[in-house]
Image 1 (cartoon, rainbow, N blue to C red):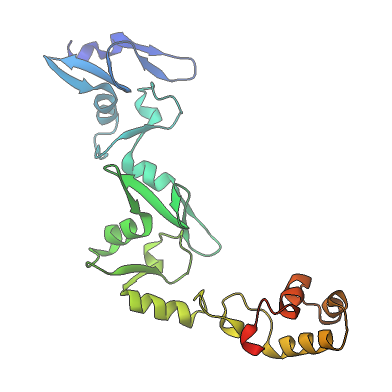
Image 2: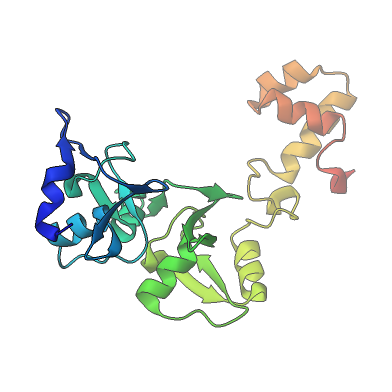
Length: 224
């Protein structure tokens, strides 16, 4: 087969998908040109977008894996960028793809890599061995390079504690704390005097579940 013969074996559908009618290798359409096998998707993509990178795979944007229309194909870089939502409210670039433990991940060469680390190295340079990439914005899904900084594990822990994001903290030092120690003393005193939990809840306008945990000593144990 010659390069100019490719169009003879393409069936163009009404939805603008192009289907290859000859050989396939796994899910990839193959053309034998001058005795060598080539990916038809890569040939057509490079012809339409000569300046775009062909590093990695080509993904179909139409949802049809058999489609070879270059207008329906995106390279790995464009696919990566398509999974980033730039939040206008907080400036975070929030990852919409695969997630693990609250962080964004992207597969490269069959290895899942943290997106915020990918973006730091892409925009700011190599990450030294044993160094963490941390967030100024405290948003683990954010990969905006302007929101990222590098530091040791010790630096990261100090930053968490200073921002009250340390999950080992308790009482007023806990990152979700919305009441004071004085509130806790009042709640326990009222409960000791015989006031019902629902009445304390209405009196102080503090969530009933919070009142319940304090009165039964499930929380704020350090003030017992």
